Amino acid sequence: MVGSERLTNRLLNIYLPLVFYVVFLLFPFYWMSIVSVKPTNDLFDLKFNPFWIQRFTWENYTYLFRETDFGEWLKNTLIVSVVSTALSLSCSIFAGYALARLRFPGSNFLGVGIFLAYLVPPTLLFLPLAQVIASLEIYNTYWALILTYPTQLIPFASWLLMGYFRTIPREIEESAMADGCTRLQILVRMILPLSVPGLLSAGIFCFTLCWNEFLYALIFMSSGPMKTIPVGVVSDLIKADTLFWGSLMAAAVLGSFPIALIYSFFVKYYVSGLTAGAVKG
Image (cartoon, rainbow, N blue to C red; front, side):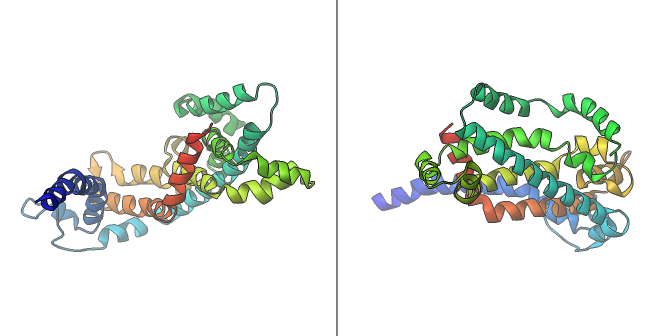
């Protein structure tokens, strides 16, 4: 009887909530997937079960690649996200290490100020950034986004890496300095290899933010084939009161696949990097 009661309690208190949570979490992806492979007429016909596929078709994906510039949107989004992430991560490594290890006047104030800069809404920054982009004459180019995205990415990534670097024992660096290593050699040869979870956490965060960003992409790079996926989907698949639901969901599935793939491979390092950086500060 005791074993039966324990099993019942585990089912009610652990497994049932987990099943509910998993269904709740995965249902949007399931819905996007089934809508993307349904004919358009089936979406509005009440005689068909909306939660299942009666007739399978690839026409929504075909329309996406033949009638729109989705391939170009995908390429643009990938280039901007990868380069912006690399640039932001490179700057954040040096900023985070300096704030974590070096002592100079105003270092604590500067650390807080960098994080507060991340809290500034992008809607307050796009007007002055638009003037900078116009003066540099880089509208509707990759550089328009590559140079503006780090304004949001570097503050948070620096703060995250600063917390992670502080979890690494100082004795390692002191021993290396006693052997004649410079600060740069210590950073490259010792700190960075030990900071892989933190680097992956910051990199995934930066890449995700770049991949999903809409406002700056709409303002600085939204004409012709230079659109990114968020801007292209909204501008080309939503026309007045006409929504191409099948192709919209197909674009959502393809657009979310790279992010889901990255998280599935690096989720362990992502979680450990966030938690390690949050414990010591």
